Length: 182
Image (tube, rainbow, N blue to C red; front, side, top):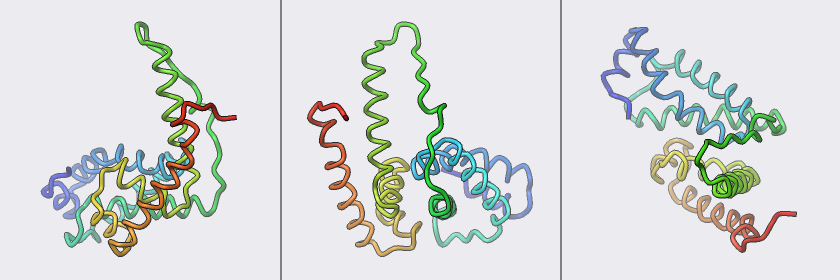
């Protein structure tokens, strides 16, 4: 949670406060971008774009909405724009696995496989479903925060999440049964 005093100082033109603010939110911004775009390089680009937009538009933030909701709206809109302009690509770096000494390699491989299955399933969701899933389950937004962030009615958010969970359950059916993707 970002301190309101830090936001006020950044809005007042305090460059140090603004840099501190951006550093505090950069991981959250990247995580959202990564799960929406499902590609490290695209997520880094979107994160940078979002941070620049936040930097230039900080004075337009009003306390009507929570700061993190305002930030997520910016990141989400940038990701949606990038997603529409470019087909997703896969980074070779995403497939490197590093094991530390003493780790149970089998557990690590299964965990990595499960995470990849879930990431791929989320990536197959329609854009509006993927966005609400990322905000709800990866960014821990409440239904109301998602509605505010995406400028949607609360019931629409609930409907999107319900349908997204159904789609994920279908997409992850083979994995849940212990099956192997072919």
